Every structure is written in C-alpha cells, then in structure tokens.
Image (cartoon, rainbow, N blue to C red; front, side, top):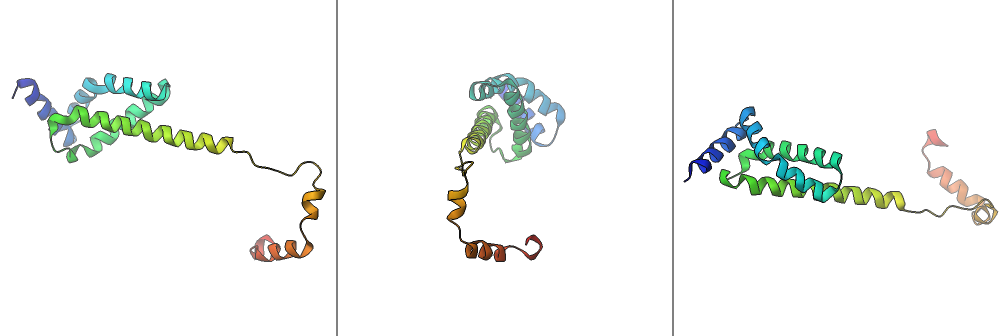
Amino acid sequence: MEPVTNILIAVVKQAGEGDEKAQSLLYGQYAKAMFNICMRMTANRQDAEDLLQESFVLAFRNLPQLKQEINFGGWLKRIVINECIRYIQKRVRWHDLEEQHYEMPGEDMSDWISGISLEQVNEEIKKLPQACR
C-alpha cells in the first residue's frame, strides 16, 4: 500500500476510537467537497452548513461500523447525500401541508348549520370527555 493510503487508514481508525485530532483531520480533508454536495442539493448556505455538520456527527458516531477504512470518502459522501435527501423530503412534506386548502363555510353559515340536526349535536357532545362538555 502507498504511504498516503496507510495514513488515511490510520487516521480513520483513530477517529473511530474517538480521537478528536483525527476527526479534525478528516473534517479538514473532506468538508469542502461534502459542503459542495450539500449546497448543490439544498441551494441554501445555512441548510448546507447544518447538513454538513449533522453528516459529520453521524459519520463519526457510526465510524466503528465502517469495515474498510480506505472507503471512508465514499462512505461519508453517501451519508451526506442521504442526509440531504432526508432533509429535502421533510421540507417538501412540510411545504405540502402548508399549502393544503381546507374548505370552510362562508360567512353565511346558515346552509352549513341547517344541515346538522340538534340530535346530531347532542350525540357529538356526549362523545366528548366530561371535562369538555
């Protein structure tokens, strides 16, 4: 193996054991490229910075599960992409909820109210907890 490869393997192993200096070295080596991925996927600097940080925290937490240290770069890239996808999906779902329109009765509620009998109202009230009646 090449010396650079041996160094990468050693640094990844140390980072997996919680060595903050090794983690800092890995962050310095990969942060710019991973940030660029986050920016391309989110088009928002603040979101990209947050996702980058979350991705590195997740990667360092799960580093002992990495079987081949030499694959760290690709493994980290997959974590970053997955975190971005998760964020985008959550944001899209939230946006969809915000845009749903609910039909509400207009100002003249007499038509809406006239469709409900007094018995129906009483039955619904009986279903409420005692404290809410």
